[in-house]
Amino acid sequence: MIQEIEEQFTEEILTEAIKRYDINKDTVRSLGGYESFVYEYQKNNTFFILKISHTIRRSSNNIRGEIEFLNYLSNKGLAVSNAVPSTWGNMVEEIAKPGTKKFNLRRRNTCDLMM
Image (cartoon, rainbow, N blue to C red; front, side, top):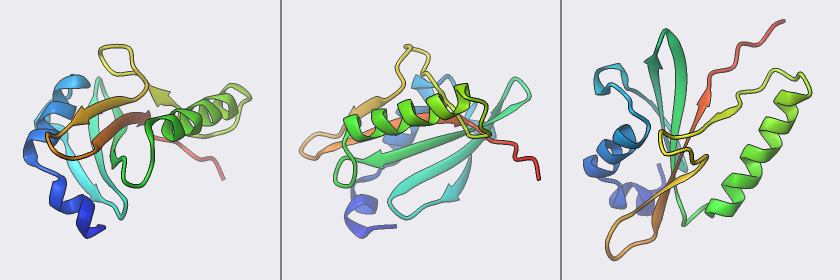
């Protein structure tokens, strides 16, 4: 993990992310990450990925563009993990930590690839 990002991440940020996506904390498992904190969790017998990024590396608009592109590919029949909105209906959520830049949140369905 990039040190500057890791130093700003707190348990409160993860707790807020879990709240915004109505996730059972007991199902959350860290998958690591380099520029983002990546978590897997299960809800209604479906696995999801929650990705928490910092605006030091990627803006909210950049992430929205990525989501738009992935959803476009999904709608065209490609096997990609499409974005799923938060419980508030947002594709990207922002959590501001006082005195720092924001963390961006997004979640996706996991992708089953056929070989």
